[in-house]
Every structure is written in C-alpha cells, then in structure tokens.
Image (cartoon, rainbow, N blue to C red; front, side):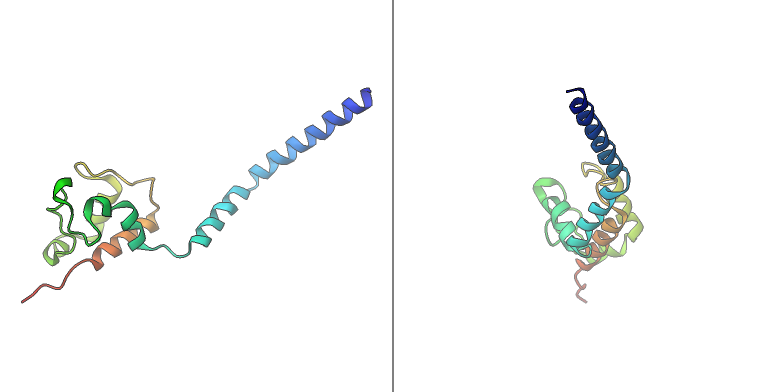
Length: 126
C-alpha cells in the first residue's frame, strides 16, 4: 500500500513539474504568435471599424449625438492640419471623451488605423 501511495505522489509531482515547465518555455508566446498569424496581416480599416467607427462613423464624418461630428476625417483641410504623429498621439492617449487605446492596441495596429484615417480624405473640389 505504501508503494502505491509513493508511486502516486511521485507521478503527480513529475506531472506538476512538467506542466510548470511547459508554461515557462514560451509555449504561450507561440500560441499568441499563432493567433496573430491566423488573423493575417493587420487591417487598418477593420481595426477602425471595430474601435473607432461607433463614434467617428465608417466614413470618418462622426456622429452629432456623440459630439464627434466636428472631427471630419474625410475633410481634406482637417487631414492637412494634422500630422500622423498627432493622430497617433490622440489614439494612444485619448482626447476629451475619447478613451486612450495605449495598451489595448499594438504600435502596428495604431499605425494601421492612422494609415486608414488618411484614406478617408476626400478630394477637395476646386
């Protein structure tokens, strides 16, 4: 009986050690990398739709009820008055009632959203 109890505890101990080591070897990192790879390349339009469009609208015109209609991303003058860095800073740190996305979005995701915002500009009529 003592031999069976000893064997049970020995096997349990080995399994616990093995499972702990698996968690420390980077297998979680591999899983995350696999998830990113399965999602494919970063899509700025999709990220904008998921994180920004509910307040800023799909075309960047904003929503009057949200107080975002004064920021027309599709206005060529608005686009000319802002640098990519200013847009990036606003995404990362928020502004007014807009939440900050620092920590929620990666640098690559923020850059992809900035690039998408730049595509929203309409050609100014002369």
